[in-house]
Every structure is written in structure tokens, then in C-alpha cells.
Length: 201
Ligand SMILES: Cc1cc2nc3c(=O)[nH]c(=O)nc-3n(C[C@H](O)[C@H](O)[C@H](O)COP(=O)(O)O)c2cc1C
Image 1 (tube, rainbow, N blue to C red):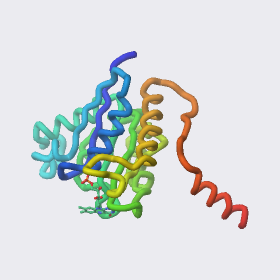
Image 2 (cartoon, rainbow, N blue to C red; image 1 turned 90 degrees about the vertical axis):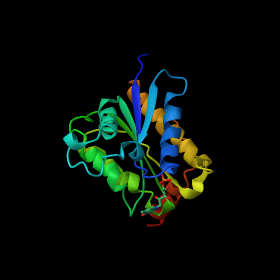
Image 3 (cartoon, rainbow, N blue to C red; image 1 turned 135 degrees about the vertical axis):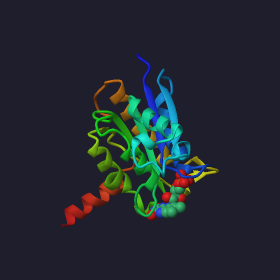
């Protein structure tokens, strides 16, 4: 098995960060028992010179290294805190400076964190379209976690953790070139509710 380079990038503006912690949890699950390498970056790494750079050429060395790592990686695990219903501005600024062709066909696993469940669909309605622009190969399962899912900065909620494993398994299958269904350890509560509503008209 060849050693693949997996890069994590989190849009947090402060540390410690729940989002960085979530991306790290996913990255650890992806490389567990595999030779792949996982490197984690965040906006704090890129911050010197990031906000003032209006073009790639104006990036400081630390910011350029983060953008280079995103472009070079064989696969990405990305995450952002929800700020005002979307990703953080500097998360988007980093991707605005990524070459539009650099992520074509690249597996990308999407995560986000927010204060509560209200903006959980930011992963589908805001983040997934961004990687659609890049023609990236987004992993079907995205992971969203709220403040209450963390304890002492670590992800502890069992349902979110099982979603982390589900998404990580899907990413591994993409990078290792496998196919076939992934077993899902999830309660079908919402599906049952939906089916009942459909049956009742
Ligand atoms: C400026 C700002 C705006 C925020 N806007 C939202 C929001 O619209 N929806 C939400 O659920 N949480 C919102 N939050 C809460 C953060 O998304 C949440 O606490 C997140 O987990 C913080 O991640 P971090 O620890 O990686 O910084 C906001 C926080 C800040 C500081």
C-alpha cells in the first residue's frame, strides 16, 4: 500500500478549537492502522499575512505553505466553525487562493462545528457546494458537531463519533480505491418519522 498524504484544514481563528479537534479526530480515524500520513493545518497557522494577501503572490511563507499543502495532498479533511450561518471568512479566503484546478477529483471529507444544531446543514448547503466548484470528490457522509458534543475540547458524543468513523471509512475507501457499501451504525429515527408522514399524506 502506498503512503498517501492526507491534509486536514480547519477554519478556526482561535486555539484551542473544537473544529480543529473534530478534524483531528477524523484524521486519526483515517490513518489508524494505515501507513498514510496526516498533517493538520488551521487558519491560525496561515494567519500571518493571510488576511492582507489579495493574491497568491502576496501570501506570507506560512500562509503559502498551508495553501501548498492543501493543493499537494492526496485527500483533504476540512472543517470550519459556523460563523453567521457559514464558514469563517478566512477559511473561504484560503480556498479563494487555491488553484481552481488543484482539487479536481480529490477526495474531500467535510466537517463543521457550531454552537448548537441550528446550522447543522451548513455542511450540505454551504461547504459541499464550495467543493462542487472545485469538482472535488466529496465524501458522502459529512460530520457536524455542536458545543454540547465536546468535553474539555474533545469530541465525546457517541453518535457524532460513530459518524466520524462512518465518514472516515468512506474516505479510506476512496483513497484506497475500494468500492461497495459502508455499514451505517445510525438510528433511523428521522427516516421512520419521514416515512410515517409520507404514509399519512
Ligand atoms: C463570530 C461568531 C459567529 C458564530 N455564528 C454561529 C452561527 O451562526 N451558528 C452557530 O451554530 N454557531 C455560531 N457560532 C458558534 C461557533 O460556531 C461554535 O462555538 C464553534 O464550535 C466554535 O469553533 P472553534 O472552537 O473551532 O472556534 C459563532 C461564533 C462566533 C465567534
